[in-house]
Length: 173
Image 1: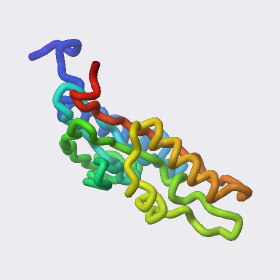
Image 2: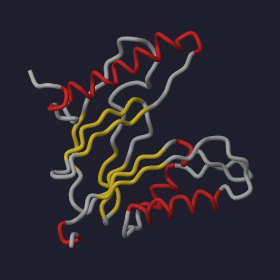
Image 3: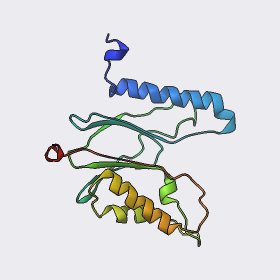
């Protein structure tokens, strides 16, 4: 048996155990309050692009290339805290050089304008059809579009985003 410090952080059994423990804690400790949380948890190996992940009822992150959307990382289990003993499946994807992983909360797609119209998943996907030179540029473009859409409307939810681009070998100096 390998010691904890020697274990791979992308080991599917460790990932699954962590998520199951978190789910059971929320369900047992906060069940009477009907508390739950969605979660996307991923471990990326930058050397080979392997992404081991669990999506617990969260908005499906997007894998992008310059040509647009390549894949969505759909839920592989329910939201955390619904009830103890739930099953969560660890999945594996590969992020190739030049590809970007974009994760976001529903505050992005649910942002409303003053008339109540949602920014929407279609709005986000339309924006992603244009390539961005960097992960930071992609986040700035989305933030600007959502801010413009909901300029004078009251915000009702958080807007959280994470973008990770795997470098091309030609990008390295």
